[in-house]
Length: 332
View 1 (cartoon, one colour):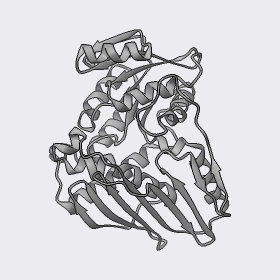
View 2 (cartoon, helix red, strand yellow):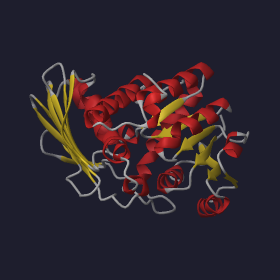
View 3 (cartoon, one colour):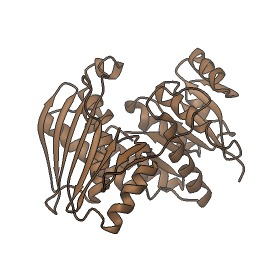
View 4 (cartoon, one colour):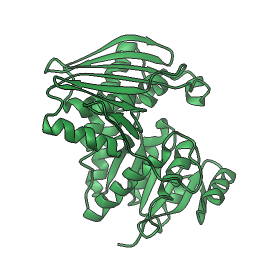
């Protein structure tokens, strides 16, 4: 196969870092050939910055572009379902920024349609493709940590000035935008769905949650969109613990024996906006492998995991009394 031809939806921060990450991979394998944004000027500026040949005002034109094999969707969460469905309807494979959709019902409908169409579709849980995650997974598989007993996760970033947070959508801040990173790690570590989900504290853009698992293990989660937290994940088992730093994009960890392991990233041609944005390159390469193999999902972020993550987020919102319009339309 020649290079996988990418189209990008949106010209925002996530899309910028995605284009930067693709630039760290061989052009023989990946090329960004088009970008679409809400506004021709935004699309044009993005295309000029990243050396992209084609740009569109609006997303429909990108869906019709026959030179695009796969689309990365970096638009706001409330638009994910509509845009992703349009791209699948046009025969494009899809990599959609997390969270995949607003709720489990939307996610189920979207992934079901992708499977029906025989097209690859994956939620952009980029964390799971980092080499540090592969190291932790192997440690757990071998039993080096013993039975997992507790996972303590904190993610706190000052993002209260971001429009979707400022506009007052608690779901976008505490549960969806930040929560997806913490929830996915907890489920990935315990490899099961929690028997109990308890919100222990929740205010505007801040959240504390416990996920309690059948083996007695607990994932303690804390997120904040108004203050910086440790941004670490400590995975503790009967035989010791591993600490991931900047756990959603970790290039460094402290291993069981206290050894600090580093996994440096290559520099992109243009500087990324988000920390370790170049690390998106790992999931980009996974997409190519799966498309070449004719797969509709990745076993690293399988459809079932995306539905489980959405189900946990729905349960958290329900306890907080946070409802979205989509909850009345899309049922699990």
